[in-house]
Length: 237
Image (cartoon, rainbow, N blue to C red; front, side, top):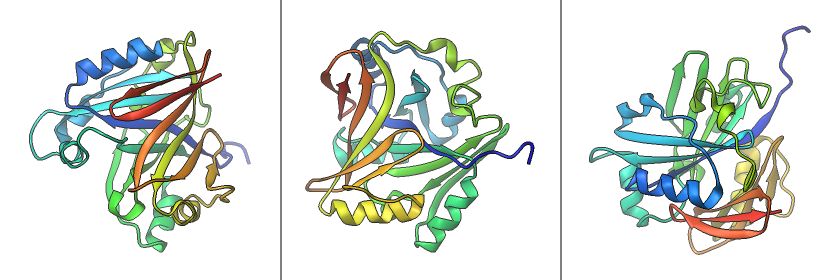
């Protein structure tokens, strides 16, 4: 039928936490050749400031606490500046994933609605390794179309000299097969070799001492690696 949107689930954004936003944003710009597209005033109510950088049609976000007692601040204290904070997916229907989460005993930590945007964030103690968000933006089925978290004109900031796209996030945990299976049930996607392939991007599960979001793979002009905000960035041509 006219107006219907084909179901999709895309790895759209990763969120990292820093104590010093200006310093880490400058490091990211220098290392990855990215340009800032937006700072979202809506995050101030959570005691945060942020900045977003487009990588192709996906995004890297850094948040920093501006007051004591924030969830991001507690994350920094708990992990000592290591690991990624959130894995953010855009989709055609966040309510579908809320229902899946409830069926799996995963709690909703926060829900966001404004200006044609709807986001559902799940509790990281229930998902394991990272907070997950499923969101949608009105008119956002086209990856080059609107994406509310990145502002009204994010496309102007796309740079492709160094990095060109977000390929995957890497999750470490003591039981990769078990956590991959749990996320696979939530995403309603098959697990192959401890990885979940999405309509854009992928999530890979690897063995580690603790459950943590530890790495990002970016499509790039050349092969390289760098650590930013306590996360390993692997650039792969």
